[in-house]
Length: 189
Image (cartoon, rainbow, N blue to C red; front, side, top):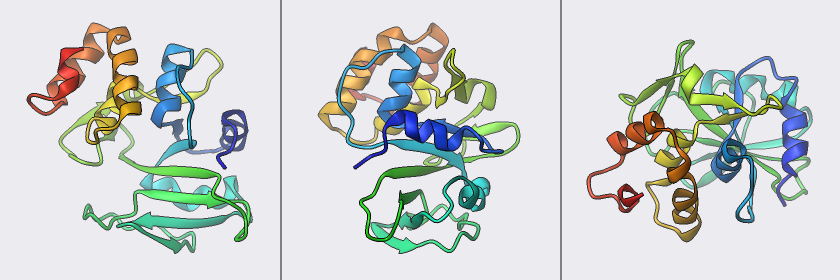
């Protein structure tokens, strides 16, 4: 049972670290409208900021999702290795007997730039990687979000691409085209 998007934003607004909407909600924030239902709510943070989650979600039950396994998280810094078993998400719920309510996506970056987790050679300055709505809600730039979604083939991601790619600026579209695999089905957009 995902949190409502407004509730997730309210929880993260006081954060002293960088955070952003990810997934389909990020794409909708960019276009300012919705076109499909969502089964979850994702918030992105940088790996080095993960230990500060206890200030945002005090008393919540948080598990590290890595390699298909959920492990209770002790709040310590997350492993920085880039293997298939590196921590890439924190699953969060209000208590151990509650349903999962929030997925915190662990992103990579330094003080100057966002780094694509799947290929550290792909980078964007933070000013282009994390954008904000007129209400100040931060979200992952659509071209970066679509690059994440491009790995898997599922109808919701295809719908997102068909809806969002035509609305990208020429600069955003060129960046996405440069980083999509050769022959990727979204290149037609």
